[in-house]
Length: 180
Image (cartoon, rainbow, N blue to C red):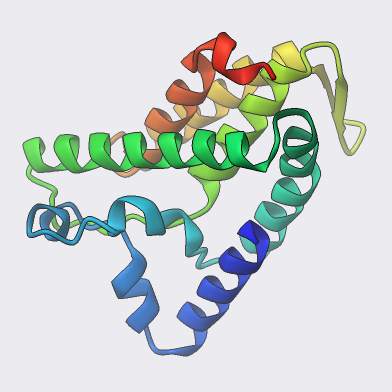
């Protein structure tokens, strides 16, 4: 369902001239005006086709393993908590920084959080990316946090708030709630 929703919303957003993109994106100023659904819908819109493919692959691969281990309900709760906390933090920080007009969308926060959750659940599982990077689950969390911090340095911390917060929440999520 998560893959289907992400594909449907992203493809419609790409074809409809920006209406879905505008309606689903996280815009702090609009959240303050009562459009609270934006705290949940922003990670469903991916504007780059290759990122959309990678996001769906991550959801399928890592999300299915977590769903087997945790159950669908726990996985949904975890992702909802991560996304909402990241959305609320983004709304607060962007408003304080005078950037409440910025629009946030994209799957990076959600799928990176999913990978962090997977790495915490399977700390000894090996993972390799094209034979270039080989890590165990426990090292993947630090690697992903490092990548997100590097992106925040290059892209800008305000622009990367949702991703940074989502990853920190996933990395610090109580271990007792991750077990089944």
